[in-house]
Image (cartoon, rainbow, N blue to C red; front, side, top):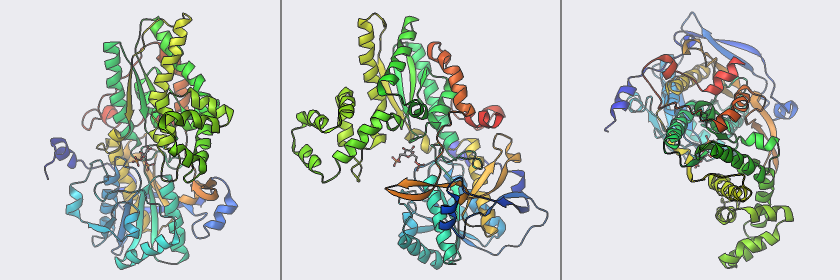
Length: 551
Ligand code: FBP
């Protein structure tokens, strides 16, 4: 395989580990834990894995003898930079415990376990993947491990390969399922431990014990580099407003962190929109107001960041989407009639089927977006919110609003737009030093938890704004992060998703500065991720982590 010069040099990088993992390790148990909410229900659902203590890994004095052990690993869900280093960490960790240990990777995500598709990850095979981005080492997938039949099917192959522990690298849902699996195997006395690792570029798997999910750091640095470049272009040509949608599902962590790194003119935060119950019209007014203020200063350019999930957080849009989901549910009479109707009449007719409030919102949307809301549906018949071009929706609505303002003499500038969506560009980037080190440490920690017989734990590495040497490695019982939530009409135990906290330091910092950033041009240009050079450039963490840990 031909590899780039950067890949060659980067392959030599030895990720940093916390001091406690460099030699003999001892496990220190903390106090028993409780789930974040709904303790009674969760305790009942997880009799074998509830209430376990948080464990911390500390420097030990004696190396302990471990038997050779086979371990399985699964990559679950969307790609996130650093997954290959988690696998390298697990591999090196189990080999350190006993050189006879083996690592098996299930192919294409959790489905690989059920379908018995796997490879052995050997030292030679792994070599080409160290410190690289992507999940291509074994592939990933979105099959959900939820059914007992799947668990039993998985157990067959685990037994066949003599696998004693499984590491599931995934987001909140995958780690919830990992915990259900851990409980199921523990109840069955199946002899298989299950450990989770916190992955997702979205940054929404975090809490008191999990400071950040891996991949967030690298992905936002990639987006911030691009945003900085666009800002410089905007400030050079002075003729475009760039509306940039950023990936991240419901949470706005990516948009917030990118804003802290680049200081754009407008940053929308979905959680704020929901809290203030803002209407689409209010959001458009806010944006148009900033465009007009900048135009009054002769600045007919700017940059606006828009989180992927925004639309779902605007109460009136949420209601409209819910009504459309019901009306156009697969096989419904309305859906049949809608499909048979001439395309030119569809939208007008559909508006007559909605409640008056939703009909008014629906009619106010540009027709392209109204069409997306009715045509792009997932296999369950629901609107595919992430496919909605929110950046264009807002751009077109701001344009209309500015035209009205012009008539009244409230706007006398120009408004030219460019649209962007950043998401996939960042998910497989070569991991930053932070993610390379953090992921390797998470994987290594997972191997120690396995060696110590733990199950139902998530690998955790804390104190991450300090030098890697000082990081605190350990394990957190997954049940500790759970609460009961309604999913597909049923109450289920799930890991609480972390949205942007409106009383948190990162958001407050944005609020304290955004009025200035809106009107003045205060752009920051973070530039590309650096691997070699001054520590403050190469090893910097996200601003989110810095502000959270300062406060
Ligand atoms: P995970 O939650 O699985 O980590 O995926 C993150 C993500 O990148 C989201 O930000 C995005 O909405 C989604 O995946 C896109 O999914 P897909 O890769 O299936 O298009």
